[in-house]
Image 1 (cartoon, rainbow, N blue to C red):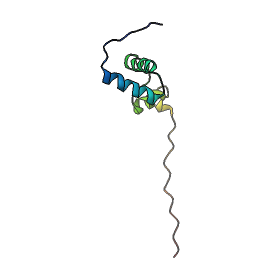
Image 2: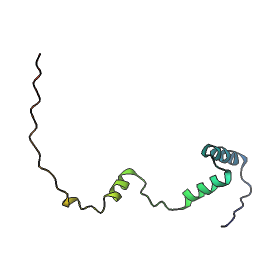
Image 3: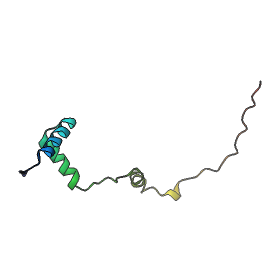
Image 4: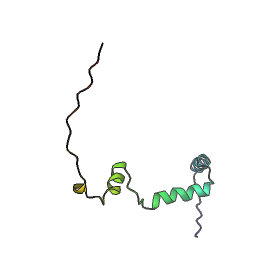
Length: 81
């Protein structure tokens, strides 16, 4: 694995990074790796819910699914007072 040294980081940025790492229960180094991974690696999963649903059922032929015929609405029971 490669190493990376970053110099001249603003103190306020370093402080925010330290707080964020603490919130996630990780070291600053692990937090930076996670930030870089999320920023630079392409996401394989669709980003919104509708896209995920569409991808999940993409292989199903919708026209092949049986659609049952509508049934008459039943009459509600009478209320006796």
